[in-house]
Image (tube, rainbow, N blue to C red; front, top):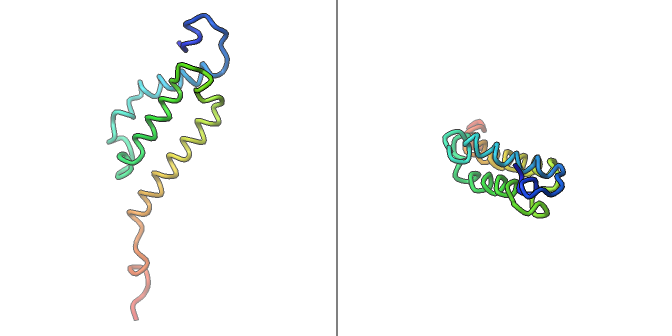
Length: 100
């Protein structure tokens, strides 16, 4: 239950965004780096924790205001993690050019 709901205050869509945070905690991914793609857990785990913490912000004015904001942060997280992994596994330009 969102903090404002527990206090008996009016509830809006931000209560659902708060609920997303507990769902992410229950899922446990923030505690299980082995679920992340190889090599990106150490870089992205702190960012994931910040996203969840912002969802769980007690002050709804400081919480995410729209689900699209969470989506944008998650897409950035995925992009940043994917670029690190692809850079590590991509062949070097020298390896792919034919020798003379």
